Image (cartoon, rainbow, N blue to C red; front, side):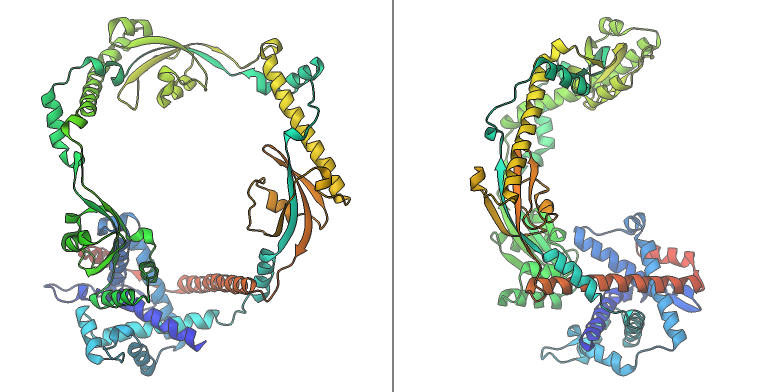
Length: 612
């Protein structure tokens, strides 16, 4: 318990360092700034705490995304309100601790400070000069820092007092771990269509009965007869000449796209200061840590460090060293916009050049397509005027460059204009007698359509679909025959027969667990195994036949098995932590409900403005 509390002190201490790491925001300057943004039961909510917490959160997000977060962006994502809620919640707890007379003595604060690695010298002992220098760099003094540390530690003690008496959910965790680690021993085999000796042969009555029992399978969909006029850039772009000068100009304007300099796939891990970065480098060099370990210790995922492919100039001062490294090398610490960082090179991307001659055909098409889009856009007003004057689809074909056609449209249609989502939506929504409207296509084209008639869904005559009916009947009958054969074999096996005696090639899974999967079996294979009684045999339908499975053994989890013990401990810890969080959150919420909370919105706005 003592070790756990010490860990919490250090955690809160490091959080305090992060939160107060920008304490200098309130030092210096030519004009006075607000020192409070509100109060809780008369206890000031320090503007500095709010500013430092918000700045730290913004910096963390910047490190994860690789881009500095602006105050405008932070406000848009609600970060400022979340941080305000956080500091208010902390101050509510401070007020309650003050009401209870709960505090931390000087000796305990001193022990926490002296045990912090960031304040230790080269000999591993607390160094007051290092301590003062660390605070000075962050614009803090000892009194301000130790007050914050005292409050953080007091809140931790208050939290421990609220949730410390709750029992560990040992029984609950034990039941879940035992359930999760049970295993089953099963034997199984497949029964395929080839096992059916005599394929069923349908009579005319069978086919007619299947047809009548499954009308949906043989019903023609709704058919819409549509007339349309349309024009797309692709339909006219080949008619538009493009001179070489225009192609050359476009190539030159996008030269960086065709002539790409050498690049690297890089991950970057940023540290708060040079001291921590150098310590991490030493651990890497000694083999004590890996890059992945360091990323995890910073509370990040590998994806948070990924810069993608970058050019040397994009890495500023670190560029030369990173580009001199080989694939897999880790270089640094080196400067970055976010602080000292280490870089891992994951791949070397050679320079690549697409010559003008190679790019010209595609560029010529692109220019022609753009010009075609412009021509269609210029044509749109003329089409609108003609439609307003009562022009028909056929008139648009004869009086403009639009091309007309007809289509018997169903939801399965995909030819011509039906390949466009916009046309499919308009065709589905169209009503007879609608006034024609221009609809724009995603590629810069346009169309106008008219619904000429609708044929509702209709059951096709039996004689027209007789081959389809026979195929469907045979498929269903064969599946039923396979299932019946498999069931007869399962019944025999349950009665004591062996798989081999039933002509099956058995496979065994002696220790199947609930999280397992067996290749070549249906999705519900494992679930079915755990629902069976010992000695039972069942048939499970499969995509290409059926599976016959027998449950051979039921194996309870061993209470002292390492996997069970570890899972039980993990479940207990997770559930206990979740319950503790819920209880303390409810406690905090209740305190807030009864507290007198005042927020000075103008002071908050002033702090936000200073963070821009």
